Length: 366
Image 1 (tube, rainbow, N blue to C red):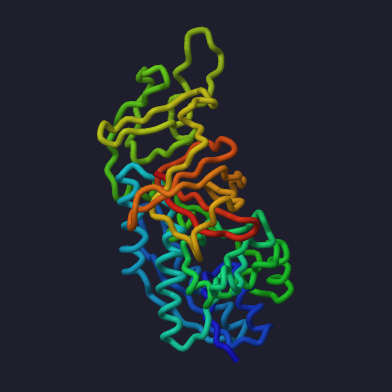
Image 2 (image 1 turned 90 degrees about the vertical axis):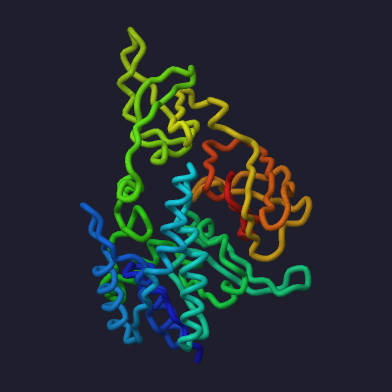
């Protein structure tokens, strides 16, 4: 009987994952990863509540339970990375880095050393082990529930990690997961999903950043090169952002209503934020994506292979016209030419490539 360590976060998805694994006959142990426990001014970290819920589920299911304290590594690999990227004027995705460095590396390594044969998580994704071009491959496939599919966040996971991972929810929809939790009276059955920053809970990113970065007021400049307002720090704004600009009141004489402003760019050295009221502004749209720090789960795509790309979670898949290698190892990247324009490409975010239902990998937008 194979031993599976399932990451129990205290939420309904990981709870049902543990339930299904036990029903399938695995020797299951639950693990709560303590990644962050710091309270910030006005922000209560929910880790204790989540830990207790995870423990209650383990007791309900009659499985072993333990906690891994990864706070030191998480601060170094995820939080510091995120802060450095924001300071550089980028918009990073901490969930992707958490999966790469913590859940599917540190957690996996620790679990295997602890006696596990496999790990499992509550992600909505599927994986299969097979042969590709006469080589063993671990394929990452989209979940059945297209709305909940989380392969975008998993594209940097290695094929070795995928070979040791089970995604019990891959063939289920969210409503089905809720029903299973309620049917089995799991204490997390009606628990709401956590939103906001992955490790702090329901906290807007700006509120979190303000704990580490001082506000530095600067100019907001429109598409006509006119200064129309003041921001409290270019670091807090991202390409395509509409809300939080506080400049809607500046209306031309005689106009009764104002068009919303969108962020088109920023200059970190000058601490300036550039905006437009024109949703069709060329700076907001692009048919090309330049990427660096590429990661392919197996091999790089073949020349002429039919590809699609997703530039943010839940964004629609866009057909790729061509993929061209740029630079050289270890900073090699690609230039992706698209069949149609994509809005608000944001440096620091990820673009993830698919061939049908398979997630091939991706890179960081530059």
